[in-house]
Image (cartoon, rainbow, N blue to C red):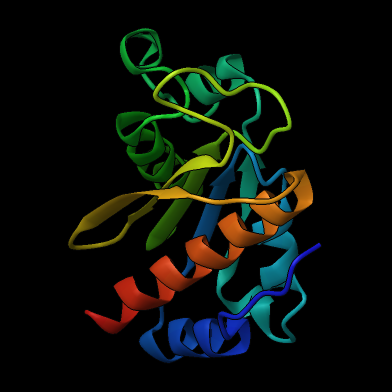
Length: 161
């Protein structure tokens, strides 16, 4: 798996200093973001948990992503990523919800959404932020790049408060 460049220790420490809590909703990373956060000693002070919402039924049923969004935009889309982030934030009562949904490959790409297409979203106490990224490499590389980018987006969102 690839290297994570985001300082996860700093992310957990900053969240603790701010008195905040975190929750994650992961699709294409399959729990990798939660794994990286829970590798940090003291993460239990800020990390409430996560949901691996791989199937659309889980996105809709557990995270309350509206079926209309899934039908209109597909699971790999900006509106679904944002709905996942706000859904996990609400579900677990966290200050920050982060979500990722994408196509890790090697199959699954479609016109307009090739393999490596990922949407990342952070829902915080005062604002929401969603971005589309394109990653390269094999499945493990896309997952690692996605997790790193999601953690970096969360850290940037926390810095801007």
